[in-house]
Amino acid sequence: MNLFPKNEHVFERVIRVVIGLAALSLVFLGPKTYLGLIGLVPLATGLLGSCPLYTLFGISTCRIDRPSTSKT
Image (cartoon, rainbow, N blue to C red):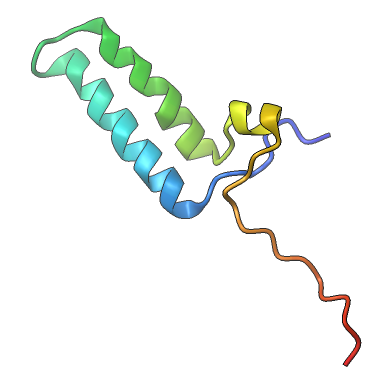
């Protein structure tokens, strides 16, 4: 069993990192609220390429290359 299976598409990972960094910026800029620490979640999942909720529910946005079974 793989603890952190890759289950996020590259585009989704980029979006998660951007959202995570934007949320974290709220801790240092703007309203300076600690609610921006919530940005650690999408940042971490984006960097790891694995979402625990996706794993729990068996979801994957990552394209899996499977060997062809057709004989040509």
